[in-house]
Image 1 (cartoon, rainbow, N blue to C red):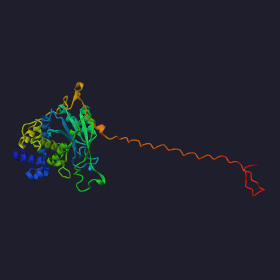
Image 2 (image 1 turned 90 degrees about the vertical axis):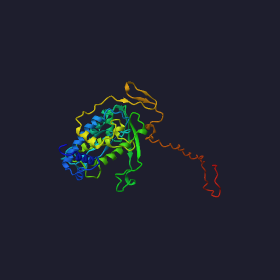
Image 3 (image 1 turned 30 degrees about the horizontal axis):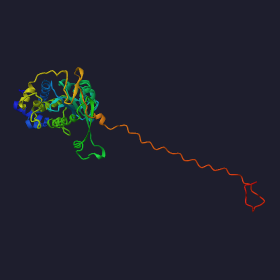
Image 4 (image 1 turned 120 degrees about the horizontal axis):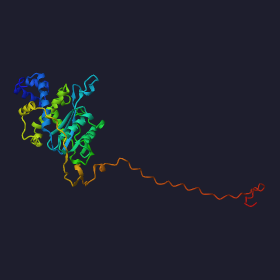
Length: 365
């Protein structure tokens, strides 16, 4: 690329792309032709994938959050026809984040189906050395994917947000993009015995907002979408590499890579660009045996390194749930039968005297 663009031009293009600008906006800002920008962005994204495979591996993350970000390629899913290619339409980005360091551990671009979910969770499994506590939303394919890659000994919990809907919900112009401030969250245990207080998707959802700010192709109601799936994947890889190595988290005052121990300084754009363009082919990490982190609560190790048997000091979430079976209604008091009518004594026949009408009748014959 050195014989195509000067170093200063390439740096300006990179700065514009990681700041959320589209290709056309980058062309207006830098004076570089669109095709050159697309080729350069594709080379940067492919280098970012190789750099991510080399740096982000053998991690000891004990709290992991996963989520999906909506996006599309060429056209939205409602406009897709049978004549379009399989990659056209919705393109979700699955992302896994370390809660403590805010590091993006793994990501995968594809359809929101079981196949993409399995590949994403399997990639997350290959980058870890410690069995984490995993938290996700209520997306059903996560259960099978997590059980296949991590087994049932993982501490896995799902958090579901029940937003308001119907006539009681918000119906103003921005109700689709600004959910209620205090939604009702339902937490349910899937595998293991996770700590409900640590189970949340707040950090990864905050990451989604940062990602949409730094990647214009993933914004809503925007024309900066990708026309091909390979360019969309390259833009996602470039965004997460910039986030891990160059983005300083305000609450941590360091980059996620520094907090995770992958580097010791904040990378500049010059350093990032040189590393992306010079990065060679790197094999994807392979799954290593996972060790269980010892819980802080009293516990007893299980044989074979299968985890720990924790001492439960309070009712589990399953016991706290209200009973679904309604109690039978109270039985009504027995109805007392009506007393039988009184039995009248039989009357004796009376002989009437037909000849003496003035004489009162007697009972004698």
